[in-house]
Length: 426
Image 1 (cartoon, rainbow, N blue to C red):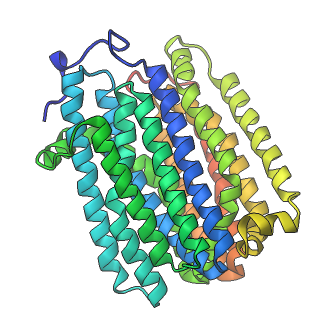
Image 2 (tube, rainbow, N blue to C red):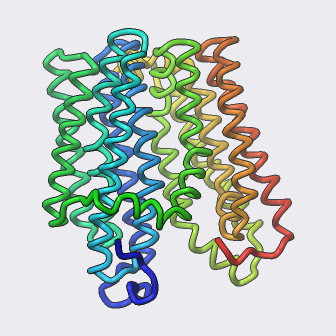
């Protein structure tokens, strides 16, 4: 595998090279489209099935989301960082290797899900987990192809792939639920088949096929990035997904459905946080390089996002019962029980965005990860203890307590490190 070193690269923003700002914008747009697709699928399923069945769908989403996050950390985002400024020939070969690595991870994760499904309690959850195992290769590869197009400065194929994938997946799920097929096996299998079709479209648009030959070398040469990005994911969204699974083990599968149903309504607020953070990383880094203070921009960013997400949360708490039932069916009862704590959680995420950006800009990734580790451990412990004491409502309160302490830890780490010199290695 040709690695980007020396002669393999071109100057950033040079002739034929997509600018960093352009890649960031399209990366944010892709994230928005991907998230809205999942939310759209969730609302369609929630309106069509019982609360317990939606809990099984929540498990399917957790497994798929976790595998997708790890694949992005080990493949897609690594490709975007390493090969965004590469010459076309090098980038094309790297795209073959990256999509091959996504295939390998999809097969490994899918095999794991299929094996684990055999020991899970209850036929519905067993068959659903088995079905998601079959769906994972297609899901991971079509997601990787979108990032390949963005890295190459070709946003139109990325947008076309994302829109076509969303349209096919939503159509399949709508047809299945409309015809009365409420089994998670059929819905998940249809979802996975649509993703596999999108992966095939990605191959055609890119005019390349994934290569499995160089997969071990891909992971070996990019280990410095894959390890760091995977740890960041596990300490962030990965720990929350694991906490949901533990809560489901304590309270029952329906608890996962209730927690995810509440998150469905909060996805726009999370997208505002993630999109704003992505767009502000470069300005924060530029200020740090010039030796300018970051306290004021961190405060403005955190408070601004906190206010915006709080306003969205207040609007959600005023949603009438009939509208909530119309949007999410029987799952609304569980969602409404945990919506208020979930709103506080997203507000804490907004408040914590400022110090996260500042610590990254100053190269204090060790301090950032310490704060994330505190939050991750508290999510697992407080969420599980709260579930054991007071069911899904107690779990939601435990999770929001972890988010509050995590936001405080982030600010404490930032203030503690703000007087130290900038680390030039970020």
